[in-house]
Length: 187
Length: 70
Image (cartoon, rainbow over all chains, first blue to last red):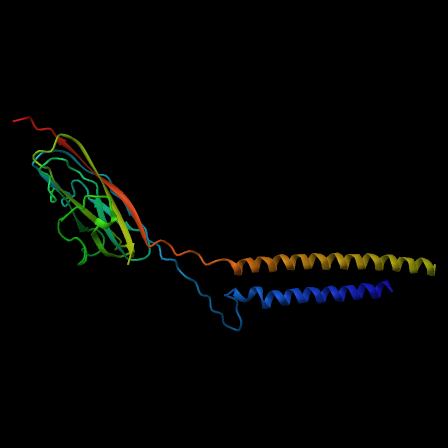
């Protein structure tokens, strides 16, 4: 009698387990992909686009300069901003900055920038290939494109942003600092 | 002798029934856990799109030598 009861419980338990497993495989697993359903299987994956840059050279330090003199980074002294596309998508990089000079004779060409080659070919059309006036407000609406279509591929993912300064003749002496904001946008 | 043997079979049967009931309960519990995990997995919202923009700042510094007044 007890044996029959044990067998009945065992069969009932097996049926319940089978029912639960069946329900799991037909409902909960419906959204899980990647399982092999025949001799061959297909695995799909999505690579997330990553937008990222790093600056390897900052600050750009011109050192001591007299009023009325000019200097730039195109000769490597001081070293220009070196921007690296560390993401995996092409980017457009724009730039703006806070004011560097305060002299009354300061004009828009006193502080300029341009795109410079580093790794890979020269900066493509659309980049600031010649000295361009620096937008002097930390407002993204005033951004100017510095590097256009900046690739992410290794060996071609580094560019320079050259800086040109022309000290106004009436610039007061002392330390001058400008914060340059680079904004990278996925193309 | 026959009664002793019958009692032993009965005790064994009860133990067997308890083991089967316990085992079935544990299996069901585990299946329910797995089912819950898959349900949660399927109900997860898709990952938010990564930001399309990023920014960094650098600095330009100069020390302007003071000019004597003319």
